[in-house]
Image (cartoon, rainbow, N blue to C red; front, side, top):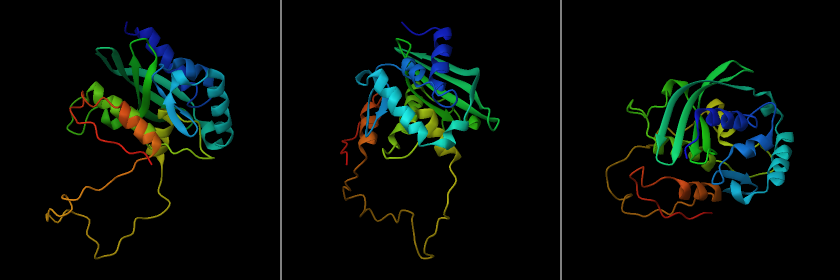
Length: 230
């Protein structure tokens, strides 16, 4: 049974409760589907395998190490897109981050039982569309939300881990150093074909490997790659 609009709104409120003040990690845990990937340092694992108390304790400790994140206050607005696709509901809503009055789009993917599978922020200029200007499919939006978790790296510092906070960090990040390159450097394809004939082993992080395994490859019409975690 797909979640009702009222359930969708309630779960989004619970999810956002751990993306800024009041930092209610218990409500965040309860908003998630059992299949949602969560951080259990140093791994990404399904929420169903993590004890609720352990989840709350882990994220409270992470919050103490991240004073910058405590200023975030989220307010959900109108729904931009609502997609019902089989056993999944994908919702794009307007979000305001009130500490700086900045507008975003929030992407939330729900399982049939009503829990949130994945979430992230989108650039409001995108309006939930793909690069061609067409509305992005539910599978593409799920891949975008899961992709935010793929970039997570476990470590002693950092803020609580979820798709909204990770995407906020990425979208607001400013580079400390300018990109520098030698004048004679060339980065474009030389059309020799020699590089393409070599199979380069690309080792991904353990969190990225988990996310790659969770992506909807068939719906994306792409072959699932053979993944080696480092």
